[in-house]
Amino acid sequence: MSKKKQIITTPLTAWLLEYMDEHDLTPTGLSLQAGLSAGSIRSLIKFPERKPKVETCLRLSDITGKPAEEILQMAGLHGVPEIAMMSPERIEILQRFQRLPGRLKLLLLKVAKDLDEYAQEGGAVQG
Image (cartoon, rainbow, N blue to C red; front, side):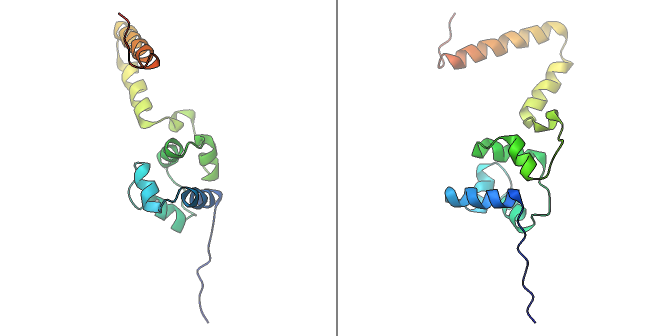
């Protein structure tokens, strides 16, 4: 009597397989593009019952363009706090901002506005 491994798919694994097929990617290739360890996507496919980290879902969202909320839902990560859906860089910026005294917060806000204007103008700074 032969034992066949039952193939389990979840909405996330089905989407990952479809995305990789459409974009001619391997699991390792997608993992590396998303800034994950080489075996991350392969592990999600091989062990679909394991839930990925929120950060993994956010990185997949960044690289694929699929909304993070959809990926989190496919992964079964319902009710994730809004802060957890932010990129690690955004969380760090918020934490550092909160530690600054009031005057430095205002200065940092001015710098952020100037950088935004610089980016919107295609790199030309108005003086």
